[in-house]
Image (cartoon, rainbow, N blue to C red; front, side, top):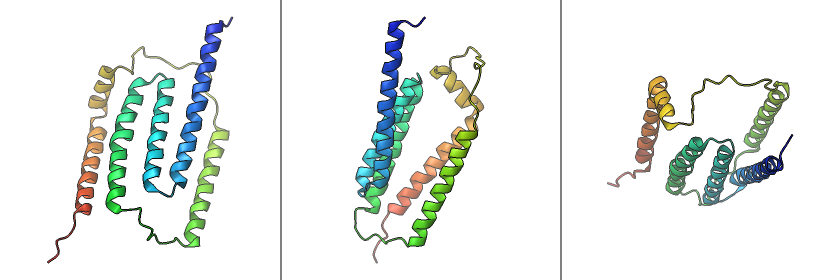
Length: 178
């Protein structure tokens, strides 16, 4: 038998999920369709925070905090620096030919059709999950797995970020006039 507090908790979680889903989708569309690049970056930050809210609803606190630190913090700062360095607010943008727009629309529609087909043909998960009894939300367990089993990909990611940072600095340097 379902108790009243359980039902109230379930509806509260559903309402919070729907609210976060609306914010996520709305800010994602506003990111794409905004003409001002600074506004797009702000909408993207709001979208990242709402995604972190979804992680909290899934009881993945560590992922939510890492998501906020990495995406909303570091990546968005890099985006904003790039936007400011490239001075994208200027109205000297070249208009793209219609064939480019048509290609983008066609590729978007094809990807959408493939994703819908995958979603329709996927089978629901029946039964329970096998549990090892280990708490993967523990930072200690995550650290052991990340730095033992996934050490090489972790280091490759750090090297990739370092190369991207060096490339940004080199691109932003102005040449000296002689």
